[in-house]
Amino acid sequence: MADTKRRALITGISGQDGHYLTRFLLKRDYEVHGIVSCRAPGIGEAGERLYYADLADGSNLGQILDKANPDEVYNLAAQSHVRLSFDLPQYTADVTGVGVLRMLDAIREYQQRAGKQVRFYQASSSEMFGKVVETPQSESTPFYPRSPYACAKVYAYWQTVNYRESYDMYALNGILFNHESPRRGEAFVTRKISKAVARIKLGLQDKLSLGNIEAQRDWGFAGDFIEAMWLMLQQDVPEDYVVATGQVHSVRDFLDAAFGHVGLDWANLVETDVNMFRPAEVDILCGDATKAQEKLGWQPKVSFGELARMMVDHDLELARQES
Ligand code: F7E
Image 1 (cartoon, rainbow, N blue to C red):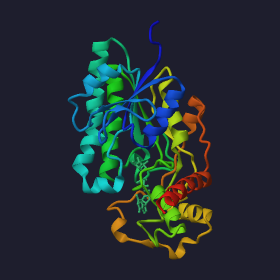
Image 2 (image 1 turned 45 degrees about the horizontal axis):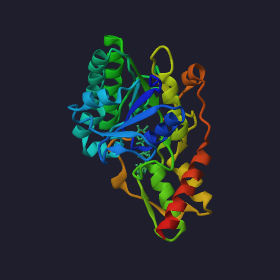
Image 3 (image 1 turned 120 degrees about the vertical axis):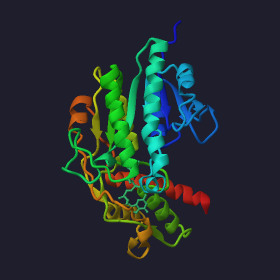
Image 4 (image 1 turned 90 degrees about the vertical axis):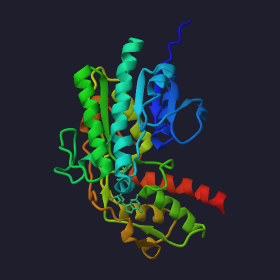
């Protein structure tokens, strides 16, 4: 019998979104393939097939496409840390920006070789709105990037649109606002806080140093957001979508929710370190996901408070093991 399973290739599969997306697709009976750049290739924890590549070097992308033979490609790989992009602007431009062009080119050639069309998802970012020119931000809001990371994402966004329009490729951008989970990298502010809350509660740490706690973001749950990625690629016509909760909270609010969950007052436990401020800050982001709600039927399910509690509970478990 012919193999009728749909096949997906995920770059950045070892990150937070790759984790949730892999499991989501496996539940829908996809065969999942992934690209890793900082761990061994082979078979992953959930049964996904892993290949070694790096978007900074496009040499083997074509070979991987031939092996994975994907129907859908999710490009989640990037140098994704905004603060770090000020220290590594060229590397960030190469991986986060030009890396997408390498993948688009590889897919274009693969489509000709394989005689089939691939659906391409580009992980675009709310950081592209930066110093916002209107609130809330939707698909029609002009970009005003405020970091080397955001500039690279704007470049990748337009390359994706350009390949769609120039070569009739099925390629689209999901413009995702901040999305977090217990799988979030520890350098991002929500996870840094949830981890510190757990360790302070168990006496493993005294203080937490943060940068600008007045910054405001539209924070959602990664597990909800990856569903929107998949829904986008199931539409007949490729279009770009904003994915957000529409709710804005400050870093301060996250501190209240996370420390409050374990009955601690953070006032004397958190200090501000000016070295952690960014050369240019994005003060506030708020997304308008009306299009995703109406066309994809997508809705976020996990609230801000639930998200903070979920992350702290997970980190309490890890801290217990540590102690
Ligand atoms: O910072 C402030 C910081 O690093 C959030 C990435 O996934 O989402 C993420 O970008 C806010 C900023 O995320 C600390 O200045 C204060 O205003 O968690 P973050 P981000 O920069 O918003 C977007 C959508 C992406 O695309 C990115 O890839 O929190 N903040 N104190 C801090 N931030 C960090 N990391 N560490 C602090 O100590």
